[in-house]
Image 1 (cartoon, rainbow, N blue to C red):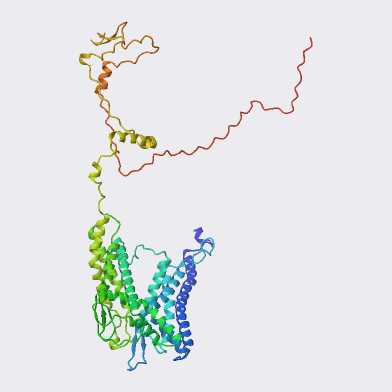
Image 2: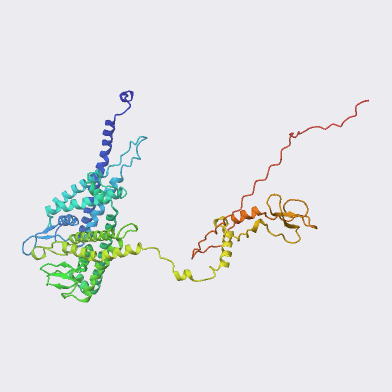
Length: 591
């Protein structure tokens, strides 16, 4: 009760309220960061458009029209469809082909704002008990940054409605939030260290348990690898086509405008649409190709129809009209290589994985690749008008289906084959090489070499077991070993055992010392000792294993020199020396 009633002790409720008050400035900073991210993207496009408007010799409108156009381009960078009213037929024509390079501008700015919002408030500016700014939860940072970004997006949509190319409200209502949510989620996830932990508890337990399996991470990796291969093949096809039609591309670029500002604008537009061309090339290699309006379709098997296309450098690099050739059909090698990549990356290193699991992982990787290609095809295409130009670019569902089939067929057998190769048993040594006789396996050289190894390695290698000597023959009828002549031994009757060795002079066992020698001869074992030695089991020889391919260096390793011991101190005298003592001469005592 004393701790609760003291005035200086804060209650838990007060602490939570104070924490909430401390969190409000951080949340406001996150909202401001999201708004600044949107403003930076809009400002970059506005400056670019204003520079081109100023440098243009014949501007169509004033600075207000340039700013409205910059707002429309900012919305187009999010995938929003713009509506063009000044058409020849008077029918409004939608413009929905989004330059994919422009999408990177708002996405990167939004991701950076989310990362900065997550890193702010590290709590290092406070006092002893952490009175500084607290780290905001990931959900709070995500919500605050997204809210600030969408507030600016709604204002830009309203402002662009008064320009020559206003944005479709329904399209802007879901395209702008989609880009903002994905970019903010990626920024918060990167700021938290890219955690791969369990999903939130509100997700069903079965889904959480299934997602934690390693097959899904491997499938994502395999699908991403296949998608990168397809995009790389598409870039290769686009580059080869531009080089093949270099003259037509150059003529189209020079004929569009004669001033440097106009050519610079055309060049920027072509660069912004270059990622779209890469996706179109990947769809062309997969087989479905892409639509060019008015029923015209370009595929490796042929170019059907005669579309009325405007002059543009990228459009002049299209394949020629008519049936396909062997050169165009060679583009089918791109999805084949993508399928091989999916199969290669779908194999795990673990040996306990079964073939069925590997095949399923490869199939999931093909599905991931198909989904990614379908999304990219949908983002790279769109309408460029009404009626015949309502569909311009690759069809997303056809591209995704073709990517799934092309990658599934080679991926599964390749994954199984790679898994079988990686989990193969260890290779056994060649029997003929083991049975071949060489100098190393000679009986004499082997013992010598092992002895040298043992001496060099010390106690690391055991002694080479020698063959046990044959036991001596047992004496018949109790007779001991017959003595050699000159040793003074003969067979006789012992006092205890009926037979045994006996000295010539005296009783006892053992030979007499030889004359002329200062030492006694070695004792001869008696019958009980001989029988015990004969009946003792012989020690089996120790088995040694010779490892082929083992190279040992028998050079003696010098031992590190021990540090020299410090010199011993001289012994101290028992009596301390006396300084300044005077020695007197001994006097003879008086008589």
